[in-house]
Image 1: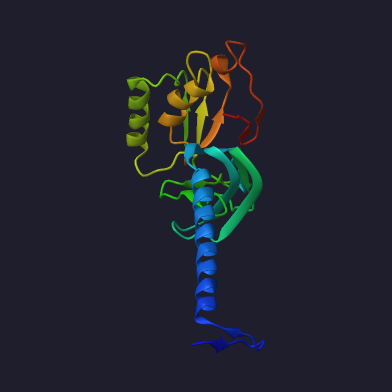
Image 2: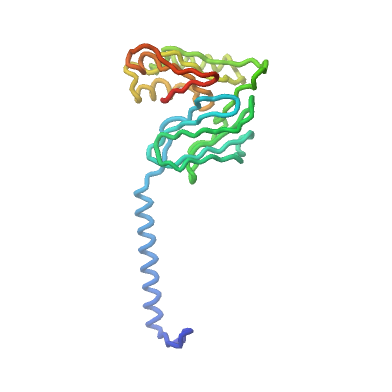
Length: 232
C-alpha cells in the first residue's frame, strides 16, 4: 500500500522497491571496494628482529624490519602482558628504530613491537634489563663472540652452551668482536649467520663492525660508555 513521507509525497510499493534496490546496490559496491583494498594491502610481516641497541641505565633502542613499509609502535611495562607505556613513530618504513627513554636502572621491562594497529611480537622473551646505576656493586654478565657469522653447527652449539651455563640468569649485553657475517658482509649473510642465531630479542647488542662488515678493512667502532652504535 502507498505511504506518505514527511514532505507529503506519496511513495508507492514500486518506489519503495526501487529505493531498496539502489541502497543494496550501493552497499554491495562499497563491500566490493573494501575487499579489493584489503586484498591489495599486504599484511605486515616481521622479517628481522627485534633486537636491542644502545642500552644504558635509562633507555634502549629497539629495532626490527618488516616486509612492507608501515609505522612503528613499542609498548612496555614491568609485567609480562601488561604494557601501559607507548611510544609511536609515524614514519612509514621497513627499518624500524624506536628509542625508549625514561626507564629505571637495573629493571626488567617487557615490550611489544608492531604498528599502531597490529602487534607483531609480544612474547615472554621480549624484554630488556637496564644497566645498574652508577656505583652499583651488582655483577654484570657479558657474552663475547668472535667469528660467529657463518651459520655453522659450532655457532649453534656455542649459543646453546652459553644458555645452559647462565641458566635462569640474564646476560646484560652481547659483544661481537668481529667477522659477524661471512663471507662478504652482505645483509643476507648477516641475517642468516648472525641475526637468526643470536638472542638479540633480549640482549643489548654491542658490536664491532669487524673485517667482514667492512669488506676486510681495518676494524673500526665508535664506543661510548654503555653504548656502541651499530646498524645491522
